[in-house]
Length: 130
Image 1 (cartoon, rainbow, N blue to C red):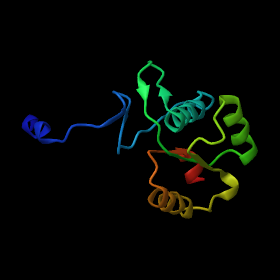
Image 2: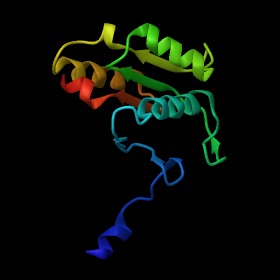
Image 3: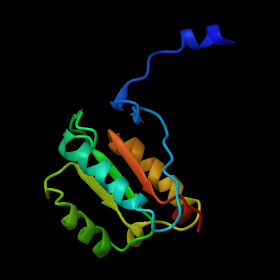
Image 4: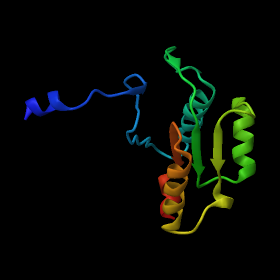
């Protein structure tokens, strides 16, 4: 019913037309399509503030980044390559600190509840299922 849409609350945008606050977004693509790089860029922009790729302003907020495929060293190298500030409000949990099986999702959810970040990234869903 089209009238129902008028009753929905307005969307609060983190990045207008791209990232809605309080919503789930799925970034999907072939291996090697730079999905992790894009996710890390979104994390950096949120953690440090500044500008989104379209030039619109990005307010600063905390980020929880759960990397299920890379070692802590690889994550650190990527963060260094992106120039992410050491004091940025970005918490990274990498594969060496993850749990096994379904407990991975439980752990991520418990960290979401505990930390209440502005942006949470799970990289990748495939890593959660393996």
